[in-house]
Length: 244
Image (cartoon, rainbow, N blue to C red; front, top):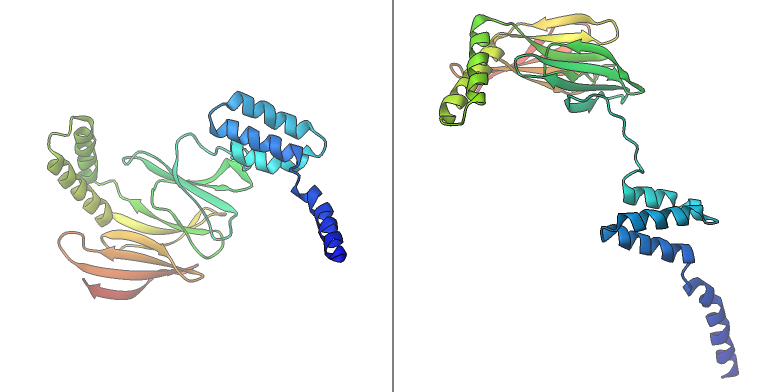
């Protein structure tokens, strides 16, 4: 019985320090509660006090995560959308501009302030092959210019006839697809490697290493789909034609 009592005393003595809450942990918890409650001034003052305390530097990441400063961000543009990385993670592309004048810009991830390449397109896709990309280039035929003006006008007025707007948008999409080339681009040399002149281009997809699939299909009049494969440094070859 005496041996059991001694064991309990020894166990209690060992656990007591562990059960005591670190004063900095407790202060950090109170600061987090203040932050969650909207008392940001008090929270920031407590965060600062914790960090300045001996050993407080170990709480830096936890505090930065609460305040949203753990992961630093770098602004690459004030007008951009659809940012994406190439397969290697070394290049970034984003789209900008209006539908009438879209552009895709490519820049280096380690130097995002400098644009490497800018192309007149909003459909740029990185290739699995290093430093290669593909995009659609639209030929500015009169029908497209006319439809763009009509679409922009319908967008600027109150939406009295949504059906008319959708119909003009469908017509514009069809004419843009019908009058597009698919272009394979060497990003470093800015040279165009290949073009694809099938009508009604509607999509580019990245597949296995070295390949890009280009989809061409009838949007309104012909329901015939073409799948063509780009291979780096060569002209595209038709892979599949299927009625859908």
